[in-house]
Image (tube, rainbow, N blue to C red):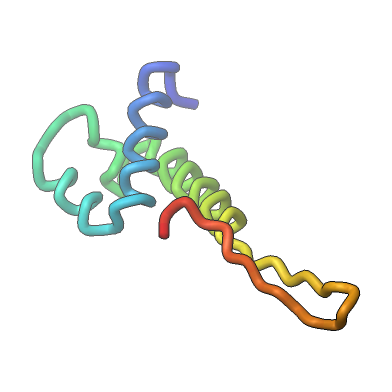
Length: 85
């Protein structure tokens, strides 16, 4: 398991990667910053990073749901809930 400091950095990077895409992750890899060595698949904490990304993607997906509601008149309305657009 990562230390508290490592977990904070990894989780923040996962948030940025989910929000900004794989290109952002690739850019961070090229910077050579030792704080981000967990981005390398051979790093012992890479699994933790992937888990964070997966969890965050699932959270975003569940917040982008479409709700179907039927009214008493028989009509159906749709709503899209997304804070990302």
